[in-house]
Image 1 (tube, helix red, strand yellow):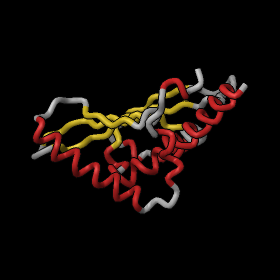
Image 2 (image 1 turned 180 degrees about the vertical axis):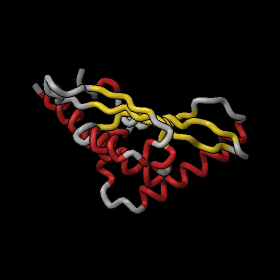
Image 3 (image 1 turned 60 degrees about the vertical axis):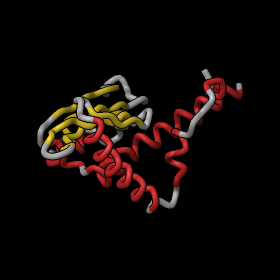
Length: 148
């Protein structure tokens, strides 16, 4: 019973985080760079789509997309990023795991420089947040602590 309750609490916090994921991506990276987004609706009715992936080079300018995904939670996205001197790359963000990654290889030095800048942006964003509870879901955990 306790494990079921823990799992439900974990899933609720994950849903809450996914809902807010778009806002922090916009603040840190800029939503004008979004290329592709995956959304889910875990409570989809028989007439609703449960999972959808949308891609558009002008994603942020399309109001019809924003209207279509209201009530859905973002699970992941791909954004255009310039890494180093005019090296175009794609940044992947997994909202379920709090994971950031580049989809193309770059040199270690270039990656270090780019990642330090982005980490500083994330830290600046978090400094201004009063409630860190949204990010508690990503604290290190012992695998035995998670309900199965």
